[in-house]
Length: 177
Image (tube, rainbow, N blue to C red; front, top):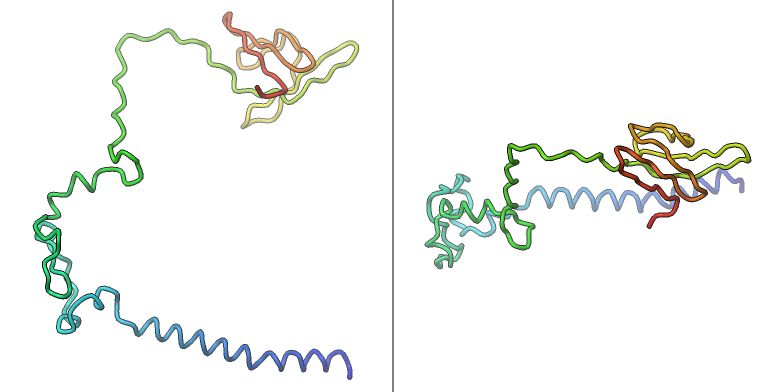
Protein backbone atom coordinates (compact mmCIF):
# COMPACT_ATOMS: atom_id res chain seq x y z
CA UNK A 1 0.00 0.00 0.00
CA UNK A 2 1.42 3.38 -0.95
CA UNK A 3 1.70 6.35 1.35
CA UNK A 4 -0.90 8.30 -0.64
CA UNK A 5 -3.47 5.52 -0.25
CA UNK A 6 -2.91 5.34 3.52
CA UNK A 7 -3.38 9.14 3.77
CA UNK A 8 -6.67 8.91 1.86
CA UNK A 9 -7.90 6.12 4.17
CA UNK A 10 -7.03 8.21 7.24
CA UNK A 11 -8.90 11.22 5.81
CA UNK A 12 -11.94 9.10 4.97
CA UNK A 13 -12.00 7.73 8.54
CA UNK A 14 -12.17 11.28 9.95
CA UNK A 15 -14.91 12.42 7.56
CA UNK A 16 -17.89 10.96 9.54
CA UNK A 17 -16.55 12.54 12.74
CA UNK A 18 -16.29 15.92 11.02
CA UNK A 19 -19.83 15.64 9.61
CA UNK A 20 -21.19 14.72 13.07
CA UNK A 21 -19.45 17.70 14.66
CA UNK A 22 -20.87 20.06 12.04
CA UNK A 23 -24.38 18.63 12.57
CA UNK A 24 -24.09 19.21 16.34
CA UNK A 25 -22.94 22.78 15.73
CA UNK A 26 -25.86 23.44 13.36
CA UNK A 27 -28.34 22.01 15.91
CA UNK A 28 -26.85 24.19 18.66
CA UNK A 29 -27.16 27.33 16.51
CA UNK A 30 -30.77 26.48 15.61
CA UNK A 31 -31.66 25.85 19.26
CA UNK A 32 -30.00 29.10 20.38
CA UNK A 33 -31.83 31.19 17.78
CA UNK A 34 -35.22 29.57 18.42
CA UNK A 35 -35.12 29.98 22.23
CA UNK A 36 -37.22 32.88 23.60
CA UNK A 37 -35.33 35.93 24.94
CA UNK A 38 -34.45 35.86 28.63
CA UNK A 39 -36.89 38.67 29.48
CA UNK A 40 -39.76 36.63 27.96
CA UNK A 41 -39.04 33.66 30.24
CA UNK A 42 -39.56 35.79 33.37
CA UNK A 43 -42.92 37.11 32.15
CA UNK A 44 -46.23 35.28 32.64
CA UNK A 45 -47.27 33.23 29.57
CA UNK A 46 -50.13 35.63 28.74
CA UNK A 47 -47.74 38.56 28.45
CA UNK A 48 -44.94 36.86 26.50
CA UNK A 49 -46.30 37.91 23.15
CA UNK A 50 -46.87 41.54 24.20
CA UNK A 51 -44.82 44.30 22.65
CA UNK A 52 -41.52 45.15 24.29
CA UNK A 53 -41.92 48.77 25.40
CA UNK A 54 -39.31 50.18 27.79
CA UNK A 55 -40.62 50.98 31.25
CA UNK A 56 -41.06 54.62 32.19
CA UNK A 57 -37.87 55.52 34.13
CA UNK A 58 -39.81 57.83 36.42
CA UNK A 59 -42.46 55.20 37.12
CA UNK A 60 -42.42 52.43 39.69
CA UNK A 61 -40.43 49.23 39.27
CA UNK A 62 -42.67 46.60 37.60
CA UNK A 63 -44.11 43.57 39.39
CA UNK A 64 -42.25 40.33 39.82
CA UNK A 65 -43.30 37.65 37.29
CA UNK A 66 -45.45 35.67 39.75
CA UNK A 67 -47.52 38.73 40.75
CA UNK A 68 -45.93 39.42 44.14
CA UNK A 69 -44.81 42.95 44.96
CA UNK A 70 -41.16 43.64 44.27
CA UNK A 71 -39.21 44.62 47.43
CA UNK A 72 -38.11 47.88 45.78
CA UNK A 73 -41.52 48.69 44.27
CA UNK A 74 -41.87 51.90 46.29
CA UNK A 75 -38.66 53.34 44.76
CA UNK A 76 -38.71 55.42 41.60
CA UNK A 77 -35.76 55.19 39.25
CA UNK A 78 -35.61 58.98 39.01
CA UNK A 79 -34.80 59.07 42.75
CA UNK A 80 -31.69 56.92 42.23
CA UNK A 81 -29.69 59.41 40.14
CA UNK A 82 -27.13 59.97 42.92
CA UNK A 83 -26.64 56.22 43.34
CA UNK A 84 -26.11 55.75 39.61
CA UNK A 85 -23.67 58.69 39.47
CA UNK A 86 -21.31 57.19 42.05
CA UNK A 87 -18.25 55.35 40.68
CA UNK A 88 -18.91 51.62 40.66
CA UNK A 89 -15.38 50.33 41.22
CA UNK A 90 -14.24 52.71 43.96
CA UNK A 91 -14.32 51.14 47.45
CA UNK A 92 -15.91 54.22 48.99
CA UNK A 93 -18.31 54.77 46.02
CA UNK A 94 -17.52 58.49 46.38
CA UNK A 95 -16.57 60.61 43.35
CA UNK A 96 -12.92 61.70 43.18
CA UNK A 97 -12.21 65.05 44.83
CA UNK A 98 -12.37 68.12 42.61
CA UNK A 99 -8.97 69.49 41.58
CA UNK A 100 -7.82 72.38 43.72
CA UNK A 101 -7.87 75.88 42.26
CA UNK A 102 -4.39 77.21 41.58
CA UNK A 103 -3.54 80.43 43.35
CA UNK A 104 -2.87 83.53 41.26
CA UNK A 105 0.65 84.00 42.67
CA UNK A 106 3.16 82.04 40.61
CA UNK A 107 5.34 79.68 42.58
CA UNK A 108 9.07 79.53 41.85
CA UNK A 109 9.83 76.96 39.18
CA UNK A 110 12.51 74.51 40.12
CA UNK A 111 14.44 72.73 37.41
CA UNK A 112 12.79 69.42 36.69
CA UNK A 113 14.68 66.25 37.42
CA UNK A 114 15.98 64.81 34.16
CA UNK A 115 14.15 61.74 32.96
CA UNK A 116 17.31 60.07 31.76
CA UNK A 117 18.55 56.63 32.67
CA UNK A 118 22.20 55.64 32.68
CA UNK A 119 22.73 52.60 30.48
CA UNK A 120 26.46 52.28 30.97
CA UNK A 121 29.89 53.89 31.09
CA UNK A 122 32.76 53.31 28.66
CA UNK A 123 36.25 54.12 29.90
CA UNK A 124 39.47 54.40 27.92
CA UNK A 125 42.87 55.59 29.15
CA UNK A 126 42.40 59.00 27.54
CA UNK A 127 38.61 59.38 27.55
CA UNK A 128 35.39 58.45 29.42
CA UNK A 129 31.86 58.37 27.91
CA UNK A 130 28.44 57.62 29.34
CA UNK A 131 25.48 56.19 27.47
CA UNK A 132 22.20 57.69 28.69
CA UNK A 133 18.65 57.11 27.49
CA UNK A 134 15.43 59.09 27.71
CA UNK A 135 12.64 56.55 27.08
CA UNK A 136 11.33 58.09 23.84
CA UNK A 137 14.63 58.85 22.09
CA UNK A 138 17.79 57.12 20.95
CA UNK A 139 20.56 56.61 23.51
CA UNK A 140 22.96 59.55 23.80
CA UNK A 141 26.71 59.33 24.20
CA UNK A 142 27.96 62.10 26.50
CA UNK A 143 31.25 63.11 28.05
CA UNK A 144 32.25 65.42 30.90
CA UNK A 145 31.19 69.03 30.20
CA UNK A 146 28.53 68.11 27.60
CA UNK A 147 25.06 69.70 27.82
CA UNK A 148 21.87 67.60 27.63
CA UNK A 149 18.55 69.51 27.73
CA UNK A 150 20.13 72.25 29.85
CA UNK A 151 21.81 69.78 32.21
CA UNK A 152 25.62 69.82 32.32
CA UNK A 153 27.49 66.51 32.66
CA UNK A 154 29.80 67.25 35.61
CA UNK A 155 31.30 63.92 36.51
CA UNK A 156 31.37 60.37 35.16
CA UNK A 157 32.45 57.44 37.34
CA UNK A 158 32.33 53.73 36.45
CA UNK A 159 28.80 53.38 37.92
CA UNK A 160 27.21 56.87 37.86
CA UNK A 161 26.93 60.23 36.11
CA UNK A 162 26.37 63.56 37.88
CA UNK A 163 24.29 66.21 36.08
CA UNK A 164 23.85 69.82 37.29
CA UNK A 165 21.47 72.63 36.37
CA UNK A 166 20.99 75.92 38.23
CA UNK A 167 22.87 74.63 41.26
CA UNK A 168 20.84 71.42 41.48
CA UNK A 169 22.72 68.12 41.13
CA UNK A 170 21.28 64.80 40.09
CA UNK A 171 23.09 61.46 40.03
CA UNK A 172 22.16 58.80 37.50
CA UNK A 173 23.28 55.34 38.56
CA UNK A 174 23.73 52.20 36.50
CA UNK A 175 22.10 50.27 39.34
CA UNK A 176 18.62 51.21 40.46
CA UNK A 177 18.31 52.13 44.11
